[in-house]
Figure 1 (cartoon, rainbow, N blue to C red):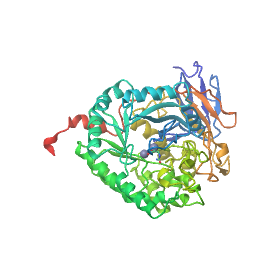
Figure 2 (cartoon, protein in one colour):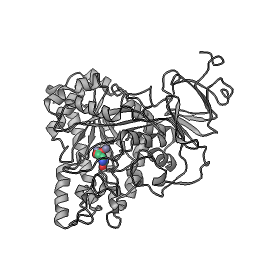
Figure 3 (tube, rainbow, N blue to C red):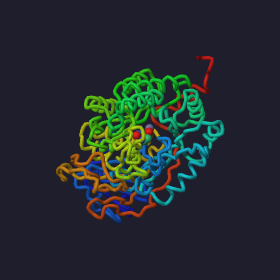
Figure 4 (tube, rainbow, N blue to C red):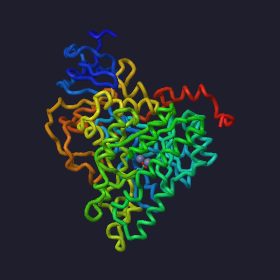
Length: 505
Ligand code: URP
Ligand code: ZN
Ligand code: ZN
């Protein structure tokens, strides 16, 4: 393609492009939804283009990829809860683009009374189709690994393009026994599906919850006491052990909050086990003190695992820097605060005026604030920031290099353009400025030093902060059929090793 004759759909000049491997002053040309050219800065200023964006020296990065969000989910985590995660696929992905994201992978929850995995996928398509502002995919949230469901794993991956499942070691309604976990790991191994594991010891935390309640301790802050770090470290260790039994089947430990769990992950990685891990902004920016607010206010920060303490935050940053954590995701799982039916206040009764922490719907909003908070903290090198917030997610979940990269002719033109350094001064995060359908942010008043100025999905500007905000219609986002993970050589190694060999145990 000759650069002179081509009419591009979009040219971005004057930006500093940052990928997981480079920081370079490139202009970018975009045509037919793809990046087609990287050229020296300024050289495309006069190119023939339908639209030119002058990035004015701001960073241009692959769009954020957030692969941990709960959209339009019933509060399946707490038995009998009337809660429902507040954001729909429309409002959740709207919030995502305003925070610089171009791809979201959220959950298709298996329904215990209708346990077909393929039905779960069809029901989730019905919610998402025509409503999204980002490209999107599904993880299957598996609560009942019955033989029929396990038989569907092949079709789930091959036909539906769902190459990851999430399972739970806690929450009574979702918790799998160790033998069930092994069955999922075996099925996942046979089908090259990545198993995401929520590692907290549910039996122990239920016991601790009963003990706390017996002492009259019901307030939100006791959520932390019911889930001490050792529960997370023990379950993490057990998950690693179980995956090693299934010939080192790859696993991803989600939303890790505890440094001692991170140490166990690091040890397994150092021993060559394909153990991957995720952390989230709530473990970098919140502490258990945020749950200890007057009255019921602390419920705003009730999530699982709970935020820990300041020193733990530091250790989690170190884990991002040194590669223990593969991805930084939001775990956006919002419930409205002032909502007595579907929100946080659904656990308040006359008898329990500060609610009962065991019934507070677990989860926080954070899909829009993930990138600005992490970028503003300036703890990660720029390449590392792109790696953990975009590129690794694309590799981990089988979307790379279409997503998470800027490879001419190959990568979708999914981009986030930031303001030039210092152009915004210091900005206070307020719930009013966010685009989710939630009545609070746990980060109210927090200072950030930059914000996504433009978000571009396959060459189309979807978010233009100074030019109208959300400027695309819902439904621009497309479903992504995903392949196996291409991170490292995790599935190549499994293929080389062949089927599970019980003789070797
Ligand atoms: O508290 C959390 N994390 N809520 C979302 C559900 C989950 O386990 O990811
Ligand atoms: Zn979880
Ligand atoms: Zn989650």
